[in-house]
Length: 267
Image 1: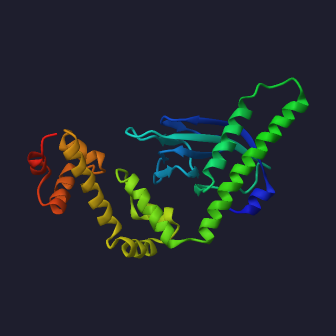
Image 2 (image 1 turned 90 degrees about the vertical axis):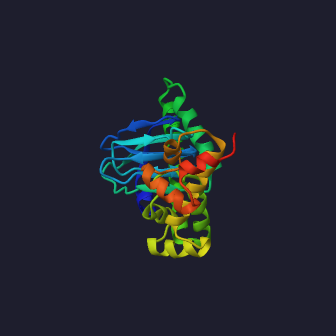
Image 3 (image 1 turned 90 degrees about the horizontal axis):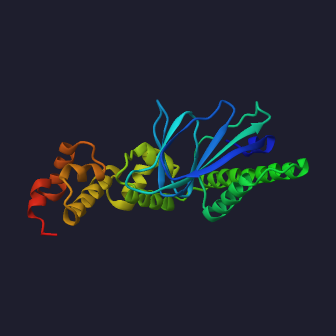
């Protein structure tokens, strides 16, 4: 995506709405959508493509439709969906994939303003209606500009230390999700090899072992603080296969999950 594209076309606002629940989103052939996460995180899944996790402070411009927007069952999330078209209709508009902003408060303010403007009652005055349309277009252009500009700056001036710290923070908060090296490296804006080297430099271990150890630590906490079955705890910390969880748990802790449960103090 390039600023030349944004300068050469006009985004035409269609709709905006916010939500907190999972839903299926389908775009028409001439429509575009941008998903902005205001709280928590959501997962966007399109058939035949890798799922994309979008967290607060990020947005995503899906390249494929229809797609499922999934909110975690155990956590709350809030997001906004803006639908728009571009004019001229044959404009080369390649704004796809994850987008980043540090201006979350500004984006939230503009979203609120866009929603209020979209909900205003239509008037009989053509002049007033034109004012409302122009106002919505200006807000939309500003939102697109902020995401484009701040994502572009992040790609041009990457801070390796900051990127790894943000990646660690993301892993610590979303350890229960299906996290992969390609996904995390892409989020950090670097190659898998470079990400692996920097990750080990900062943590002393690999991403895979860090995530595995973190999940086992979270499982230990759940064993000590709850009476949940071991299989449910395994799923909650990100293990789809209980036998794999049991084997890793024994490697990290020195005993099986069953033995750990049996010897825990009474709650």
